[in-house]
Image (tube, rainbow, N blue to C red):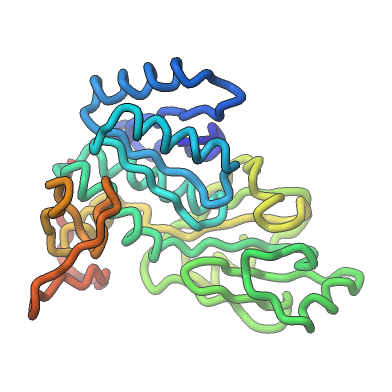
Length: 286
């Protein structure tokens, strides 16, 4: 992980910790290379997850480390989710890492699991929101005193003015995690949580990158997610596994999570859908 506050507390005693891959200004290249080599020696593979909005120098550092070590055992996963969504995904991958999946499957599972994270925020203004499509009317209304907006960035962008419409929630049993910024409101817990029929609500400290992502510090960030590792395990298991023709690692989906090479499926090949169906028997993987 590239930021300490993107590492959420574990949900159980089996969830392993995450390693921090520091920015160039905080750590020299030689030390960074030594730390990465140590991680490879200890664990065999490293799955580095970082947000799409990371500083370019930090991203270049990650690619430099992978290039210098000439390792196909380092996965660099650039995730285009809001900060709290990235943190949720990282924790789910940590949970998967102790299951009986190969590193290639865990790495390529990131794209699949991202579709099941409903990441959004309550904002007092969308004037500086540039990561979610915002209409001119919403921009105009954001200047009105007292205006607040509910925004969903993933899996499908959506924007509503509070009191006018509802955000589309998950169609599966979910938990909701909330990080309160500099905005006083109970809308997320009193309106979103019941409407989405979440089973539990968890609160965490605000994330340092969230104001920049959402365009304001006066916000409350939230994300609904699959909380049960047995359901996550079942979801990942339902997708057909392939072997990457470039690096030889296992993968699911249409792209290798370790080397990023696209899969070229044979004709008439049918992959598992990866669709979560309620009521389906659950597998266990730890």
